[in-house]
Structure formats: structure tokens, C-alpha cells
Amino acid sequence: GCGGVPGDPSRNLPPNVYRPEDTRNFTALLAEFRRQLDELGSRTGKHYLLTIAAPPDEARYSKIELDKIHPYLDFINLMAYDMPGAWAENGPTNFQAPLYLSPDDPSPAAEKVSVDTAVSGYLKLGVPPEKIVVGIPF
Image (cartoon, rainbow, N blue to C red; front, top):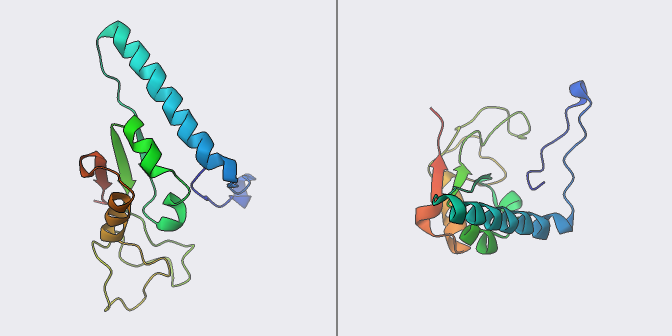
């Protein structure tokens, strides 16, 4: 996968391993899903949505070929929430979904990620703004 999710020793789950071929395989998987959904749609007269939930930080989304996959997708659901957590060096709590990075943040995250940096990063990689759905906490 593309997420880099740590393993869970309490459940004997291994860590998520990223392999270089995962990037192109994910693109190929989405292309095939889109092809099959469009084929089905040509028979039923319907359009079937294909979406993904995607990470907000460049370290993770750089492993996704956003410029190549967005034509296959109807929307990209940007997970712009739960940015700090137990994994963070600066502690498990902080702004859950900062709109912008703040120079006044007493405990800034090493990743330097905010809703703004995430959306800007996706736009710079060619994702059309109308395809970005920003997930926010409530």
C-alpha cells in the first residue's frame, strides 16, 4: 500500500511495507477499475463513481502518481484530519486539522502539514480542484 501504516503488535499485524512497484501497480489498479466500471456503465446507462481516500502529507502522497490517477477518479477524498497522533515526536495532541501552518504553534509537527499544504500539493501535481474533497473533523 501507499499509507505506511505501522504494525499493531497487540494484534500481530505486520507493518505496511512500501515497494517501488506499488506506485505503478496502484495506478494500473485504478485504470483497470475505471475501465471495468465504464464498461459496466455502457451496459447499464449509469456512471459508477471511483474515488480514493488519500493522505495529506507529501511523504505519503509522493508515492502516488496523482498526475496519472486523477483522470480515472471522480473524486479524491483528502484525509485532512488526525494529523497529530501518538506517533508524533511532539506528542499525541495538537491541532487536529490545521487550516494553515502557524508560526505560533508551541509544538509544531515535523511533517509541516496542514489543509493548505495538502490541497496546494495536490493542485501543484495537476489534480483538478473540482476533484478534491477535503475531509475535516467534527
